[in-house]
Image (cartoon, rainbow, N blue to C red; front, side, top):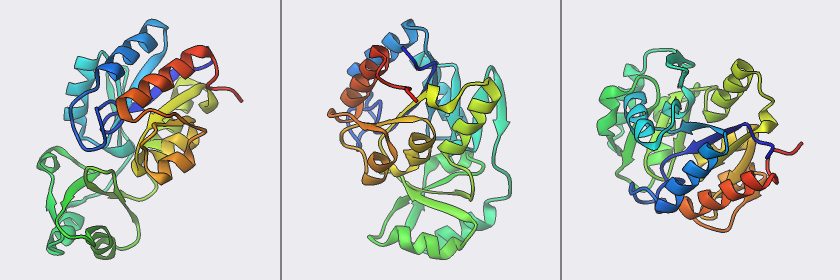
Length: 228
């Protein structure tokens, strides 16, 4: 086994599919296999920090990347990798009338999430916020955050902080917001991942979502992942 760290997305990767929030039993069993093998696991999600920490607690995971890389919770401490006031951006996005705010936005600081109401919502949001911000669709919501930060940026920060070469870090994901970490780490995309996620990954497993994550863990434990 070559991987020392496993960074895993939540929605669409540990769930039954890319359009449900129900966790996959296969994925839960795979998490336990990885943990029992001594691999340190980090949950990397677009969700807000409070929500992410709550879910991580019940998954048996200590460390968290939240708000698509804007927050890292490591060894009991919160680290903010984003900065700036997003209130003006929020007003501009809502003024488009193309989206509705996520209920989680009340607890978010940097990565704001919106539910699309129009077929061209993504384009209208990008036009409203202008340059300097990342606008992406996760398959669940449109996300807007300060430019230069994503899950890949957070993984690079973790590698430096923990003194681990990034090719020794496995990352598993399914959507556009996972592409950065799949590119930076030894990336594995589940079988039903978005084209951007598949393109960024080194390996695409056959199974979808939670089943695919289970296959990814088997690949990791076999020693076939995290090779130079």
